[in-house]
Image 1 (cartoon, rainbow, N blue to C red):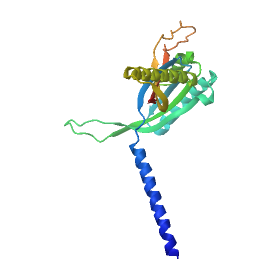
Image 2: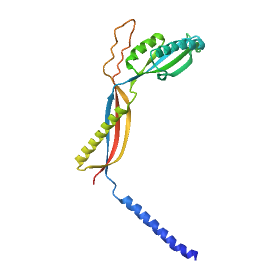
Image 3: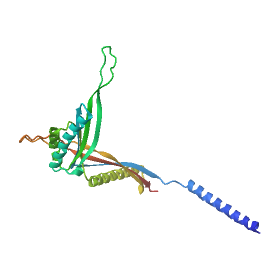
Image 4: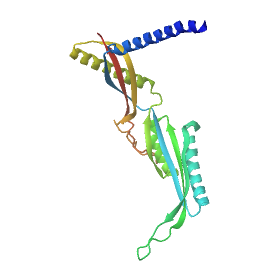
Length: 246
């Protein structure tokens, strides 16, 4: 009796499977939605409001201990001076520290290489400083060199809050993409429909030089390294896919 009841059930399942396969085949054969994909670019600029400076002290002495002590003395003086000028602890960060031997490589009279000769040890301590008043950047570098900084050259002018400028760049990128899509569909004699997909890519801000900060006349021995903060250009690219109205 159970065997007789199972046969109709098997037939029903087979029929259902056939219907599902037929529906899937029909979906595959259905015409795909016509779409158009375009890229839009947007740029917005902002005047930097913060400078990030990397300053380093390198000291070489005969022993590692002497090298470290000399470096510590110079870097301590720099840190104390920066704090005295109102720079907060949160804006001071040690970004690198090394102690390494220094060798002299020379040759014999016959041109063969002599064994390396240990001549001393070199200690390097790097400090990254965030300046929330970029007008002080030149004076800070000059003062730091006086106190013992003897390596550097890495300075970036940045924006602490980029929400507004990024919003502007995104809006320009979308307007550019929509304009391109409308231009292309109009040329093809069709119209754009619903938004199907959108993605964005953001490039690092590019400095756009403008005027240089003029060095003031020396007063009481004060000096300032000339700086040109310029502007930062923020770029956004959007890739947008629209349906084409049928």
